[in-house]
Length: 343
Image 1 (tube, rainbow, N blue to C red):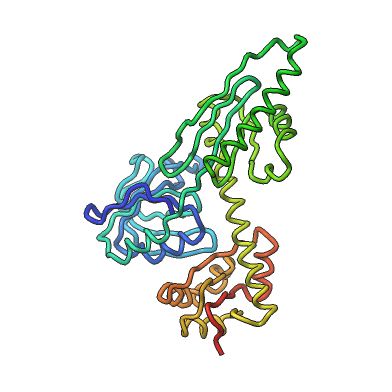
Image 2: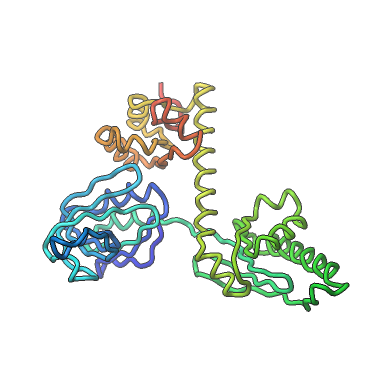
């Protein structure tokens, strides 16, 4: 969860959903009577002769129902305000689907435990080294919790392409750029690096990066360099792509660790009954639940999620976008790594 603004006194929270578990947190927090504002789609048909069209608009609704699905949280409620008042009648009802990447405002009388849940769900913003370059120039910036901070530039003379010195200077520039990236990585210690340039220059840079270093770098095509190029890296979604890959790696490792415990027959629980029993003893450290179970067995899953929160277990929703997720689903879709064995 990313928090843009949160004030218990003013009764307002501005949030962005960044992890599947955020949907669970919001389901526990958003209740009937709360007011939520978010972007949505609305069918619009002004006259019987016109075809129905979908319009993007921001709606503020007073929530009456909340339903959790595997990849979204659906809110149904009475429309209190619309960014396009001619498109929807006020006091009619509409549903808003909240998904990964959705931004929303919540207006309510906040309880302290609800504030604590939001703070607990707050995601650490990764520190990422960004580099936008072309032959002859490169700009560097750090992306972190405080936004984009430019940290340096490289600029060298670029000779005409048909000159004798062109090829040697090009090699020298890209070799120096690779060395600069490694030096900045060691000094700034970012979580990852994203480099943006034209495809041909990305391939040249890759030749000068050590093989063990390339796994730390995401290469993305952009059309310009300088600070404009840094902004283009962000606009093209390369940061979200990098974070998404990191999330999948985290899920795969959790399932693999669970399978190791399962093979050894120690500190693990598999299936609803074993997991329920482990939760009763407060033994669950990590609870793994296949996202698909939220669609198939939500009524059975919800009490388990409540017990997990009460006992301090960390909950992970595992997607089916990778083999590890499919493996977990194939053995029942629910498992836990325990703090201690439960006899």
